[in-house]
Amino acid sequence: MLNRVNKLLIGKDIARDASIASAQSVHDIVQNAEDGEVIVLDKQKKVLAPGSTIADTDTIFIAQATSKTFDFTNEAGTAVTGARELIFSDGIQGAGVTSYTAEPYQAKAEQTCTIVLAAVPTLGVEYVMRFVYTDMEEHPGQFTQTYRYTALAVDVANIDVFADNLMDKVNAHAGRRINATVAAGSDSLIFTAREIPESCTALTDIDEFKQVTFKAYFNYVDADGNWAPVVVTSQTDVQAVPGSGNWEQIRDLEKAQFAYRGVSNFTQFPVIHPAWCTVVDSYYDLIVIEHNKSYLSPGINSYQSTPVTLMIALATASTGINASTQKDQILSVLNPWMASCPGAFAGITI
Image 1 (cartoon, rainbow, N blue to C red):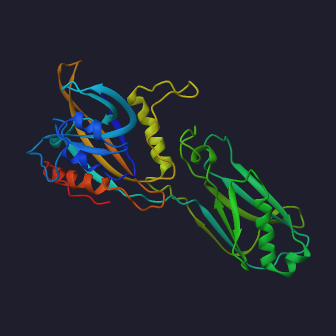
Image 2: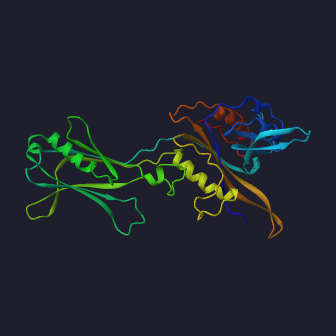
């Protein structure tokens, strides 16, 4: 039997080509589609008109136009140049749809820890800021970074100066995994996790997207040379939020999809694969369709079904303002068709 298949189509933040709405065949589509255009098709692979139902076509396909172009001669003998390569979803059979949902873009947020100092330090005492990182699964033990600072006369005179000097001590470390900030004239230290450069820099990052997580400890060295907790007014930890539809997450999904397009050798460097469709710094809304696809099983010579998940990622501008007309046009076609399926799925909005 087939295993569950996850597929991804990525739309770019573009204005929809009006000529696509009247396209009557794949030939018309490949000649007019723009890079990053996502199109809903009927079972004959003609553009599905808004308001169409399962009575009009019991199966639909969804296609994505890529940046790759080619030349061909159509059935009429006319040479066509610059036609668009399309990526097709599996056929989505209305009777087999089990879920139809949307996931709007949600910004990621890094973990923060805010420590509000309670009193000025003691002159000559060594203070220790220790950060224990909990996101490094590959490390056999706890990975830590420790910063030591000995209080000076200026610190004893002004707690705000003490906070600034602690901040500077942390930020002077080039290899730190957190940033320290202090609001002007404040006695509050704010530690914010930094992005991991190996997973948040470029499409070609080797590591998958992840975030720094940590525990912060503020101690001092007592007269016996032992560490003891510093009494503070408060310590507030706000956990990291991975968000949804961030470009790093879409990149990781796309990388996983390369295997469906024949890219199976990831040991070669650089890896040879199709052009990326993910755009760095774009935001993505997601449409997710789960359905069962029937197929003829060669082993038992009968029709079986397997679950398939189709994710459609629709980009907005990096400012978060969607200049594209794709989203509304796609939903104007999908919502009525999904509502007419046996599952009678409610229309979605993003």
